[in-house]
Image 1 (cartoon, one colour):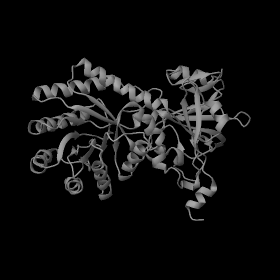
Image 2: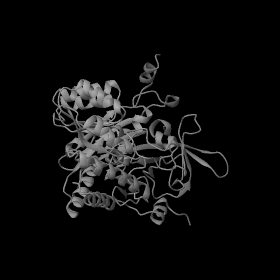
Image 3: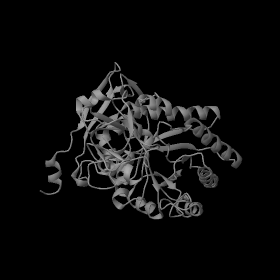
Image 4: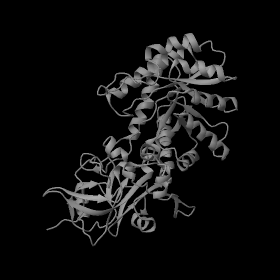
Length: 463
């Protein structure tokens, strides 16, 4: 007896889930009828569902508010969006509806802040955390913002030179932070992060350069590790090392009042995804409070910088399976009408997992397949090494079109692949659609960018 694809999913996964439902053998994402989206705009297609951005911000705010109340934590929580995850205006404008701060990482990010101000999306009191190694251009633009009346700008010192350059350019009192050069996970090729100042150097640096500085006020200690916020001994060990520095600083620098624990909340990359966000938030707040009480110092304001968590789950990519190639008696290659290297570079660059599901034909029988992109590169594929399980899809046939979707792809893909640029084998960038809801709860659709045309690419190449 042949088993339908829908029966396979029922037997192997928890389904349906909050964001995924099947209606009349067709997939819906947050209630969006995806086959109607395909019929309206075609494939390949990139989309962002904007309400999901605000939803995730509010979820995090709720978890921290509850933990602060539960543990009678004596200070506040602040949510920052790190723009490098997705610089699009529609992302920033949606995120800023939720009373958040912005984290920047380059000089061009400061230009984004200026544009947002000119458009009336932020005011002069917008809080901006300026991270990263800072070129003279970046430092100059930070100074210009502060000198022009933006008082809530906090450059996070990545090295000793940056304070000297800021001092030369800023003619008023300004806040600063210090980034700790955390120790990387043992599997990394290097021992200490290239970003920040070493644990042992921070107290001497404060005493020698900052304590008597005429204008600079140290307000924030910044901590971040590449593996993100996970319930591991490595994470807790690095957090406690950071807290030890904070406690020592607080005793000699009472103006220090904020601890930035960076980002790294994971997003859902599998239907088997299991991460207890509330537990982690609760434990972070509790451990910070306990540590500070033991040290006899006031607990800090807690800042986080969530990028992928903010925007990642808003994105999706839709494709049609245009052909199937049988290379031997075991391997079947379903070819998509685009390129993974162009549209989902994380799948080949770092073997990133994404949720992949068919959009239609859930009542058909299934087969195991590999997925191939249209470029001539052997790395342009997606299989069980990138996926959490073997890939099964409804059986390919020339007479019944099959469409698939990759979901929660909203972070990093466009910036890594080079949005609007030249892509591998000149594969065109797909049409990009924004999905929102009106005041009546109805879905609204708008085309953000049309599919790249040959003329666009040839112009970039100088033809």
